[in-house]
Length: 353
Image 1 (cartoon, rainbow, N blue to C red):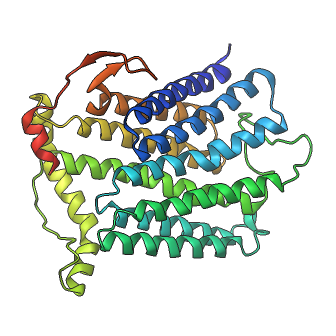
Image 2: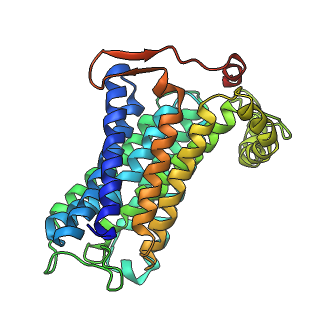
């Protein structure tokens, strides 16, 4: 088995194990974000599995279609949606709204690219949908309504449904797939621009939400040094709220950097909340494939497989580091508990507020 087959096969296997672990956690605790993440990792596993099978036996139209939907379109969007539900009780809704609007804007701007010349009104429709839903998410967050993740779900589930319809309506030219001439990696050039535009729409939203959600969680649970103050209290005057909303990203970034020395000391002494290293690993795991996937779309496909493999390694590592996993260890899909009783250090628990 060559590297071209081995790497996506390992990626698929690891992603599938991740899927099983998160699905088992959902069956035990019934948290919506766990089920959504499980679906995202299943899509990840299927896409990498398609690449492994194709590397061993050659591409065909079915593999090509399945690879594009699960990997290029769905995976990042669903993982980012899982983060939205995880942080549904926080002000992260403002960030998700910004990610969604930005994704819609980029999708709209891409209409000027010759590769999307025949997209028709799709870029405008995607942009309007993103703008309306981003506004809804922002309003729900402002009124401290925990339903804002459902507005986010409308964007992801809606785009997923549209992608299925467009895929079923698409007829591919023979041989039914397209590969990069230099690396033999699959490229999306055979699909219509309306379908290909859903890739940045979902990937930008999902990847940014996953990365920024992990950074946000790191900031929430780490020992903090507040150099810059800000408040997102909706009861303050409107002009003050808008000012604070604008400076919040800068304030969080500055406070995060200023807090790093204290976080390192807490880590070395075992006083840090387990979610801090876990979310850092998740942020890295989301960032690497986001970069290599972007390079792939720009024509540089050499690091595509390695990026996907490293991405799932870091994501899975972040999941395993989390206290949520090892609070108890049991036989998957059963109630047989092997080990229980792992707890956070008392000082680490104090950082959650």
